[in-house]
Length: 216
Image (cartoon, rainbow, N blue to C red; front, side):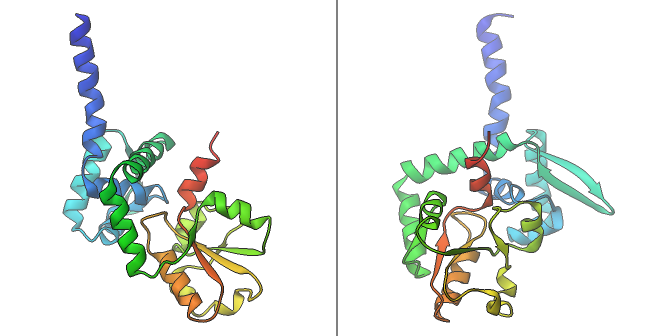
């Protein structure tokens, strides 16, 4: 086989990966699966798409070897095939956030609409924790917390926040995180807490970002 033929075949195979993540819904699915394994039914509800369409997108990801499947009772469970998949999508997002002004504008408009006056990153969290008392809460659903979380965090899912508000200290700054920069759960949690006179901040990063930051 000639060298140019070999290169063309290799790049053709590699393009299966870029094709698999070229769809916005498939990018969203990878983001969700980075939190924990999900069934097709759960994923379809999360991304507001029919089960049939969700399944089609998952099959594209599976053919590209970006996700694996397993069976749990009557359900097929999808999971990320390896951490490098999460790193790949994270790199795509990071590049987009830095290079595309439209993405920056959309996120800025989102923060304005949601009244997000201040947010912090993981690095900010580490720096501020040395100077002031912080209380970190993970407002994702319990299953995601159980699958993995930032070690110092306490699990208080958004839908439980109201009834568990007495568990929060008044003498510390509450820092809420969820699924990362594009997730709204932490925003809603912070706005809820501020309305009740808590000092609260949203952390832009989530567990996946923490995991990547602490990877070997």
